[in-house]
Image 1: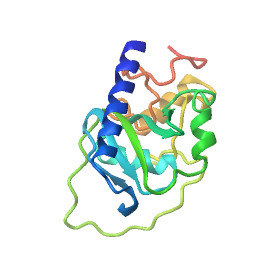
Image 2: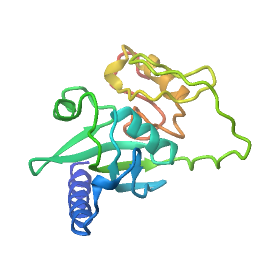
Image 3: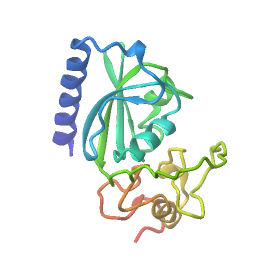
Image 4: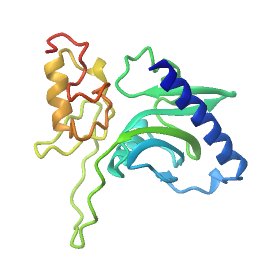
Length: 193
């Protein structure tokens, strides 16, 4: 795991430097993700149009790129957010980007192989929307929430498992609750099988 992380970190650094060397003008970006997202898993170098981490990960997941981790630089140092990790692991990220990631922030996204997004519906109609709250949960139809959750948000493994399955798991894990991809969320919580 450490060697994989080290290789991924080196790859992200090289890719981020390559993007910066090409003269990408991040200031000209529009809201949302600017950059190509890998739907079969991998690393994407993108520029985020600004907003909360949950909106970034939801947009990436809807494009078939469920996010495992997000990395940015601050003062020449990589600062990362690892989905599903305990809060202390993500403390530096939270200190830097809470409540929102600034507009035109270059990021490296690490994605798991996802489910390709559905094709757009030719007869799609607008429907009323609601603003998600910090305690948003999956809807009755199984539509994923836009709030990013991690294992510290649940008291027991069965509670995390129910949320995980309602959010699309194991086929899709936009919250990164299944660290090893075995279909079981938050295996370190009480009540795990």
